[in-house]
Image (cartoon, rainbow, N blue to C red; front, top):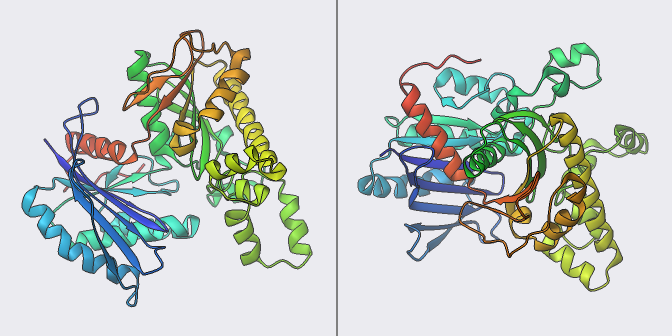
Length: 406
């Protein structure tokens, strides 16, 4: 069985998981995992464990020499121990932005690395740490093939009319278009629900709701439309991101003398649930405040829900109907109030309240009763989804070969 080391490098954290699996529908075994929190006040905070049943070990490392050096030091110590116990077949890296070139998961060689570096300005907070880590892993284990799994790749099937903005065509020719994100999650939801329902031509509205939020219209495992655009800032209201707004508002602020850095900081970090509520970008804290009578928190919840049902309606129109509406992510999986609100609101689609208490499983479960349209929850498993895509690459192509870019 292939053993894949999955690396998810983010702007504030790194997650690594060593997973053993045989194929898309076979069970997955988590042999080792590690998490790194770069926002810890004492420096890099590391924790790791062997298997899912063992206790976490942890350590702190000073950030005096920079994040990349700290990561190189820690991985240089840890990887030999891991590889002594488990033969790693391949490493799969989550890369947020693949631009127009990377429309599928693929093995990463030097020429792909050079092209990926040109995409860093499109997603600097995510692509740069991902590429830094990829290059580091290439140096630490040069004989293990490295694969890129792209958040944007799932959305390459969206029709041209849906990815093109109403801007000058020369801008489109420069690559300014809707790319879409959270594709690894939406793809995982589509595959999980096609298997659970036995319908490979499923019309699915998938809602990834966490710190970042996005909606996707999917038919037969192919994405038809999505809410995020040129960057992950567009679309639904999120924890601290504004989602879609009238661009004239931004021009208005610039004319008032705002500088670009301040404006971007507000849009990315002081908007969404956090900016509306004045409490937090964490849905749990916003709900708690609203329950205690905080009017701003209640407004934030109402605005969030309004954006959600708008997105559902738009996706249903694109698909010309729907079979399943599905939730995933921290909010989607655990916010029972939101789940109940959606059950009540989506009656117009044919969603029926459950006749018995839903039975959550490890993968996915139905919230509504059986009917013409159903509401489901899918447990997020980004690391597992990446490992499955790497397994498919191993089955389809040689890691030493040069995959043609599309």
